Every structure is written in C-alpha cells, then in structure tokens.
Length: 122
Image (tube, rainbow, N blue to C red; front, side, top):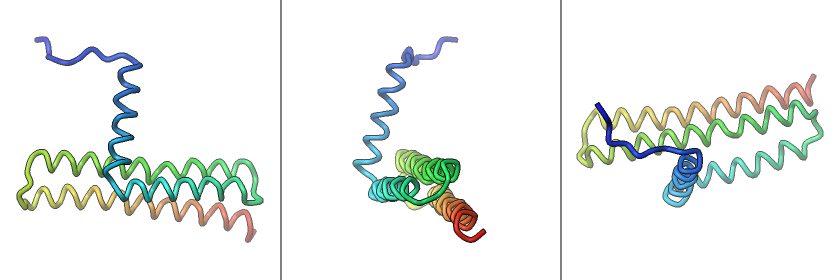
C-alpha cells in the first residue's frame, strides 16, 4: 500500500525545520522569551570566569527549554486543529505541554545552580 507522502530530501527537511522555527518564533511570545533567555544565558556562560567544560555544559543546557517550548507549541497547534471547544482531554494535553516547559526551566535552573556552585563555592 503506497502512502500519499511527499518525497523527502535533506534540503526539503531542512527547509521544513527552518519554516517551523520561523513560524513558532513569529507566533509564540513565550518562544521569543525563551530565545531572549538563550541569548543572555549564552553570553553569560562564556563571559563568566569558569572552565571551558563548565561553559559548555551551561550552553548546552540552554537548548532544553527551547526544545520543550517547540514541543509544547506542537501540542497546542495539534489540539487546536482538532477542536476549539473546551474539552477536558484537550486541556490535559495543553497542561502537559506547559508542564514540560516548566520542568525544562527547572532543570535549566538546577544545572546552572550546580555548575555555578561547583565553579565558585567549592
């Protein structure tokens, strides 16, 4: 059974990914705030007087909330595609996406706390 799917290539997939990134950044204020956090955090991670490894850990950890926000946006769009009516399962799906973002920010704070404690308090 042949599925009616477009043929994917590396270039098409890259274009789709960049389109998704652009769409979310244009339409999601929370994602733009995450980008601001990312930029400020990146600058801070590389300006602080800490080791290269510690700066690298801080830098990589800044991607966690961005990825969580993208997943949350995907969940929200999918739920909105299915229904705009209030439905308990739709609410649960959106709340789970929001919880993912919250946990990603908590993990980011935990990682930064550990690294900075190690760098300045030990």
